Image 1 (tube, one colour):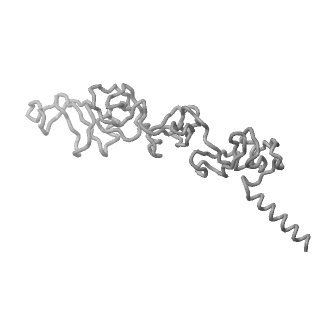
Image 2 (cartoon, helix red, strand yellow; image 1 turned 180 degrees about the horizontal axis):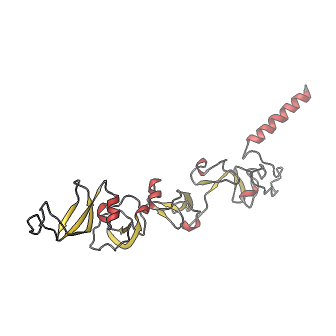
Image 3 (cartoon, one colour; image 1 turned 90 degrees about the vertical axis):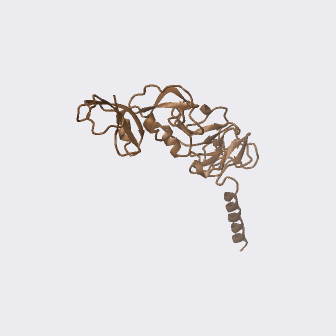
Length: 262
């Protein structure tokens, strides 16, 4: 009976040890001076909380190295499993603090530098502004493929024009960018815009016709005349024109193409 009790106590102690701290660690025996295993969390090896370290890999899974000491962070499979200011080290299945930073370039793609915290925070991955907006952010830093808050410093496809600058001549499938109420002189692919551009910003006939549900093409009619041969004037109907050229795109208010007579 005594032997069985001793075994039971040993099992209980071992079980408590496995549940304590970062769980499943096999490192220094308690002397406080060991370097521990650097094999990471896959096998459960590494220093327990409170033991010395020089890097996260010297700590047990679920821990990270902070100021030379192994500290509990928690287990994870993705960044969402970790608290604010932490991300998941998937190789060790461990939550670790976000890297310190002074600028976005110091953070991994999909994260930005939070100035007030001086640390990288996860946003989301993207390839264009539309993808960033769909995920709740303002624009996409395409060079880092990272969702960004606020407005694109290069300009946006949407916005109200409040100054007298004229838009640049953009290629088909592109629109002029706007910043601080003025055209920037640059263009962006419509497919990469943060939202559907207003009809009036579409400079090409095909781009306007593609938006037939909410936009109407406006044409200049050339050599237009009525059945009696007299020239057509604004407001005339039953006119025949020798040719047409695309003039502009406008919001669709009637189910008819508008023609401007020469």
